Image 1 (tube, helix red, strand yellow):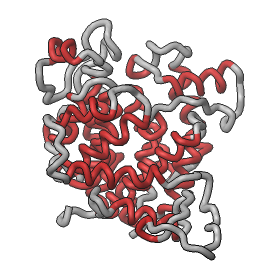
Image 2 (tube, rainbow, N blue to C red):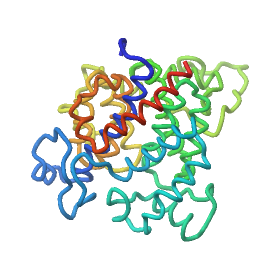
Image 3 (cartoon, rainbow, N blue to C red):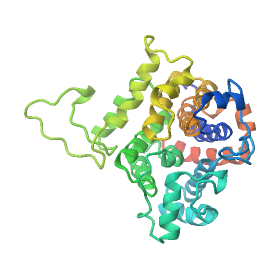
Image 4 (cartoon, rainbow, N blue to C red):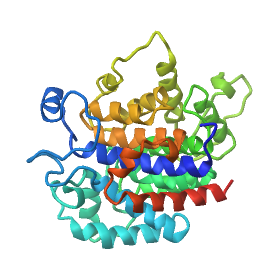
Length: 361
């Protein structure tokens, strides 16, 4: 990380997310690991075609799922508008994605549409509700998968990062805990783009941003988690999130990864420790663990994320972004970039967004 620049780390985060998405396309959502091994071998190392009858059937190795499609849409909006423009983002969803959907799961770009996007489509298209009344209660990571781009864009501006990420998230997911965890992960990603490692100190840095009023979380403890003392006033609420716990998770996972008395071997079994399902509270601890344990090794991080099965695509998207932000685009193995469909165009978009992050230094 010492030899990387903000621009390199910002582009690495974006391309890491795209690579994670494409790596998960073929072996997505195998909850029976023996079946996944039968179809793809004991260790997945590269992009692969989905099997007939599986999720994303008909797509080819190196292509993106709908998560990648929406991340690209978000990225283009940010680049074209020079920052987050909610009206432009919503217009693109109305014009570029929703006409391709019919409200059923096995439909749309990537061959599968996730729960929160289906719910937003029904409210927006069938019920003709305005944006702002389109969010549902899915506890998944769809919002996080696209707001990675917003986090990179505003990596040097944590207050704006939190405001725009939370605003974009509630367009499709309104559960307070989901929004809190999404903003926290994006805030952590912003610090990684700045050049901080995902280590045991990261959460303290995030909490200092809470104390400074930069992140909308509530805290009652003093610095370094010390208890309040008699006579201390009740601290004012910094924003909409009642608890700072989502900001504390990254460093606990980093501590577990560094503790020689705690070993998850092989590392892909982190999916069994924290759970293979789709909910954000299963996926984030595993992604933080892998992104800390392999903070200097992009390939190992994303491959262990994919080989853990279950919702391995989202796990790999998040892990890829977190590790890509630490190693930078220049340290991502070239084979992953070469194997992506439209990889050169995606790198171009990532670099344009990364230039904006660099300009804010």
